[in-house]
Structure formats: structure tokens, C-alpha cells
Length: 92
Image 1 (cartoon, helix red, strand yellow):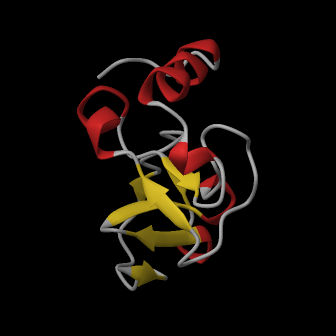
Image 2 (cartoon, helix red, strand yellow):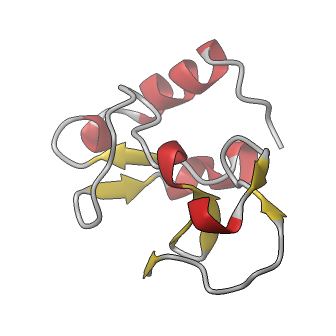
């Protein structure tokens, strides 16, 4: 599910954990994030609706992370996890 959030409640981004102003809310697969946080967790490319994939096997440890579907989504989980560690993403 993609779209903008209609809930006026102030929440924190599921990616960067910073406060989201209502005008900057973006809902991706039931996760509320900043529009600018919707980028590939491996290469940093801005993502487009329909051209990305979430790595569900890493979700419980790192939260929601999406990957561009052309190249990065097909990389081994070990490469994705190494990049998350390199970026200092905390384990949940």
C-alpha cells in the first residue's frame, strides 16, 4: 500500500526515527516515513512506487528497509546486512 497519510497525529519516521510533519508523511506498506527517506537502503537511490522491494528477512532486526528492484533487491542478504551495519543502523 502506498500513499500519503491522512492521520493528523504526529509520529516518528520508521526509517530515521525523527518526527514527521504532516506534509512530509508518506505511507509505504503500512510504515509511515518521510518522503525523503524512501530510498534504497543499499545504493541510496530515490525509490519509486512499484519499483522497489522490502527485505522481509531483515525487518525484525533493522526495521523496514526497501531496495531498488533492478539491482539491489537481488543482492544477497549478507551484502544488504553488511551495508546496514556500515551505515550504523541499530539492531532492534
